[in-house]
Amino acid sequence: MTEIYAIILFLFVLFLLLGTGVWVGLALMGVAWVGMELFTTRPVGDTMITTVWASSSSWTLTALPLFIWMGEILYRTRLSEDMFKGLSPWLARLPGGLVHTNIVACTVFAAVSGSSAATLTTVGKMSIPELRARKYPENMVIGTLAGAATLGLMIPPSLALIVYGVTVNESITKLFFAGVFPGLVLAGLFMAYVAIVSVTSKTWNPTVEKGMSFGEKLSNSRFLIPVFALITVVIGSMYAGLATATEAAAIGVIGALVLALVQGSLNWTSFRESLMGATRTSAMIALILAGAAFLKLSMGFTGLPRALADGIAAMELARFELLMMLLVFYIILGMFLDGISAIVLTMAIVEPMVREAGIDLIWFGIFVVVVVEMAQITPPIGFNLFVLQGMTDHEMGYITKAALPMFAIMVLMVFVLIWFPEIATWLPDNLRSGPS
Image (cartoon, rainbow, N blue to C red; front, side, top):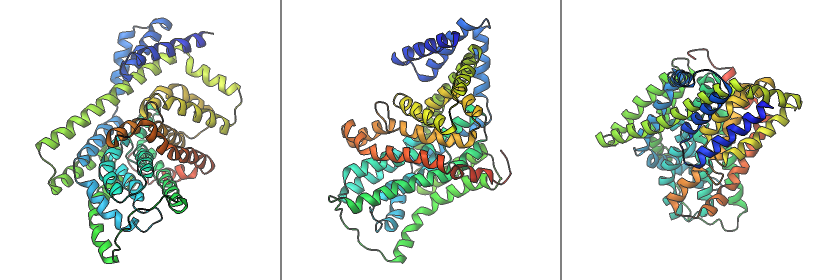
């Protein structure tokens, strides 16, 4: 009975604080403070200080601001323009034409930014004018961009996977490599959808691109060399066992600075703006993680996570039934919280259930990221929808409708992961031993 009262109390205080506009991190701390005051006799202030310091001083967490800074630097370069020049000759002749550049460019940029918002903004400002000028269907331009930008949450270096790994104490490097194949499969599903629509739609009639010789295509591909070189150095150093995720992030920052310098886009203003942008984002995520760590401790004293895990275990749900329940749970939660907040807010309760069910936590990390990717394009709080609204001036309803097929494809991807778990587990299981 105590657990039921605790659940009601936690939810009431949480929604009260969030509803009044309190930052997510501070709202989590507020809920934890109330829980500690009512359910324990420990000194709350001392406990909070100790917990916040412990969560903030994690060595693994240092990869987070570095990868964010790398993405901020690249956002201010000509990378998006160069990617379009390099990709468009190869993709123009595919069924669906240059709409594929939305998906492929998002996939490539996700591999050097780790952020869905940065991926969307960078690729969108490049592709939307180009695709509109060529008369591609507006709903496909908007929809594919909204969906493909979520790949920034999965393809390494993924900020969501770093947060998940820190929260459940799993290897960041293994999580990164677990996200590689699922990210590519999801991108492939997006491209297959575009190809099918282009063949079956009667309104698909874009301007035909001028043909290029093979030599001209190769010549344009030189624009892709910098970004692929950076991806190879960052991801390759981890796969080869030469660097940890944090060390690879530092290498990535240096590489991004060199790339920006060579392109002539690095000056004191862009350097300061990238540093301040990374600082703001990192501070926001660190505050959320600190609040979640304090809430996890507070919940532990109430016995709530274990009680819920035992309750679900008593229901004797099969593994598939548990995953379906969590799928619906995260979809609903994602309507009101961003992906990272949803992960840190729920892991204190969900992790014991998953361990009890014998589910691999590396695989489950990819499962969770696919589901919280949906949160980026589900109203009313879908962040990608707001970004696209600002970029295109479309009504929210139009953007949501355009993104709906991408949402359905992500649901399909969840079932693909369940049916073929090796997509996420094979690479980390066969990862070359090296720094963790």
